[in-house]
Length: 100
Image (cartoon, rainbow, N blue to C red; front, side, top):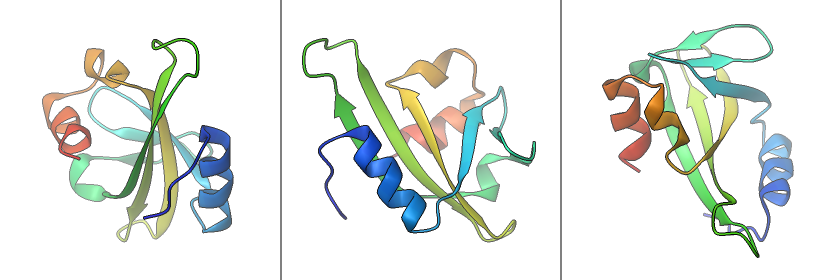
């Protein structure tokens, strides 16, 4: 797996590799921002994970998931602060994202 210095470098490279959709965490699924498509935990795979820490502020930490769904024939990304999804997501979704 490739290593990146910055979040923006990773996002740009993943877009070049076909991860063109953006996802947000909802209570029991991931929602595609562009088309409103919802993926339940069994509907997607986590292909890559990249973690980034802020250079000056430890609170400025992000995690980038490269996701794919063969069922929906799409690839996309989810960017989240470390653990931020845990307040709103279902246990099943937290387990899937946290497993990696």
